[in-house]
Image (cartoon, rainbow, N blue to C red; front, side):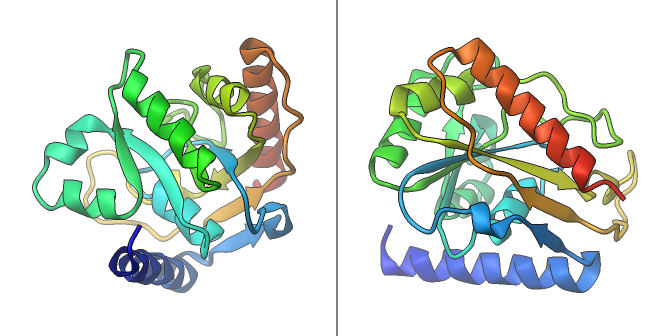
Length: 205
């Protein structure tokens, strides 16, 4: 990442933080659980398109890399924009070898990888977590990198179904303690789900 990209990323995440604070009474808990250096995987629930910006604002000044569905990279300007913000494409609904390889490369460089194990936005509401894919656990086991669970509440209330005018709910984020890495992707996925569910319960209004 060159200096120009650094400045663009910094500007976007600082702006995101300011907007969240001004309009959404943004609260962050557990910042002490964010490693200042070294590779780390953050695993978060996902209920809104703005969640990647929320996670980026929470983890700043660390640069966050994350997956985004490949269709977004085909949209003019949007694809360019999200690529500059550290996103890389993934084919949903099937095993994507290149996305897996990109994830391991990011971690091998000591960088931050943010993943949403539900695989898509969860519309269950009320702080509920959808079923998780095993990809996050697989990446962690293969890389040997710790997973830090993250819970986000409030972003699901910003846009009502069928309405374009946003609402301004409180947004809360809590970063949990790193999970003990185990060499079993099924059990590790269960641990991720339990950790995120617990965090969501802790930050409910």
